[in-house]
Length: 347
Picture (cartoon, helix red, strand yellow):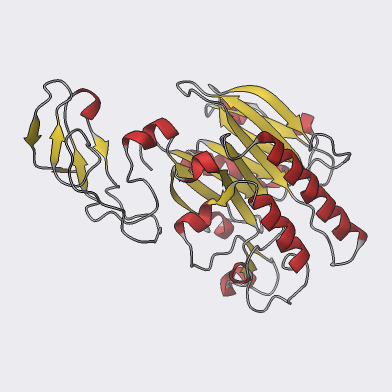
């Protein structure tokens, strides 16, 4: 991960009491910037804070006994300006949504993060299915009011919906729960408010799953669904540099039946200085540009493989004076105003 990039993760842990060691191990090994959790299955007061504080994180939670429960794990330096537990204006006893507006040091604009645990729906046509559709409709209306075309918003969580046919194993029954046309239409309406599926920015065609049943060796046979999603609002879509599903925690002892989905992104002001950040393989991924002042060490690509991202090669432009992001190994020294040619160094 680039030193300037943020890594956001969403993970349905299926009981915080059981999977707390997994969460702490993930924080230690991956060092994500923010983690959205679902299915805590405990009341808010039972959520521990000390293990996270020791690692430089704070945790905000919204829980209830036995079922549901959501949380956000964020750096201690971030300040929560506005917190919503549940969808504003929607009467619901279930702890399914936690939304926080953050003020982040060195950032000029606030950031909204949402951890959401969508209703399962049980079966198409049931009362629980109707509740699921009402819940999504209420969430869509509230998110639309936040103005995702202009605001920086992450919506992360277990949606209990596989949006497209490739997001469900071919053996999954058509028009059943998670893949019905009504659920997919409701999801499409939510996304249409100004969001983009972060994983599909980087993997437009690849078949990926984030949930596998515990039974019948489903994980070993890769019979699953992609129902854990990260949506980014319009101002953030171009800032995504990598995304995917981390299958490794699904192999740990007593794992959750979900795997974490993740996204790496650059803050907009960094993206403006480094425009080759989309999930496309760089033609020279081992090159860095060096200079003086603001021109010092802005990395184009990464020295490691492209973390599984695919897509067309990045757009290239002929060199123009003053445009450091242009292709070529010429740069303008911001102090002297002269153009020089300097060989790139391996990272």
